[in-house]
Structures are given as C-alpha cells and as structure tokens.
Amino acid sequence: MVITPTRQEITAASNDEADQLLNAVVEEMQHLAGQEGTCGILVTKTGPGQFTVELSEDVPFGVTEETTG
Image (tube, rainbow, N blue to C red):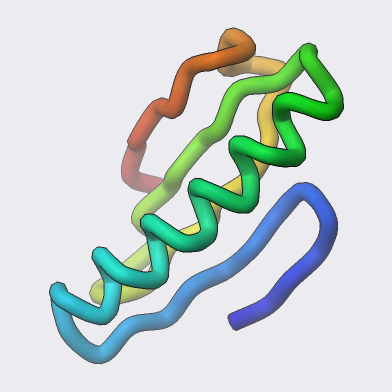
C-alpha cells in the first residue's frame, strides 16, 4: 500500500481483504476531508484487487464516489 496524505493505493489478494482495506482508508480520508472541508473522496478501481483512494476537488465535500480507471 502506497500512502501520501491525500492519496493511497491499495492492493488486495481477496474481496474480503479489499473490503477491509477500503473501509479503513476511506475512514482515514473522511477524517482528512473533514479537516479540508473542500474535497470529497474518489475511489478508483485500477485493476484486479487494485484501488486508489484520494481526496478530490472534483467530488463534492461529504460525498464518496467510485469509478474504474
């Protein structure tokens, strides 16, 4: 898992692991987004078992969006 303050990359070997990691990272990002007050959270599936979770100005504050990329 790669970590920066506003972006994290996740690699999971199973659906259960992906769910656990995504839930934990989204919770962290919600805390950061609350401090910023201007960004929402964007979750992008980048490949099998691979995700990027980041704060995004393209997503309204208080919203979490999912996409594939």
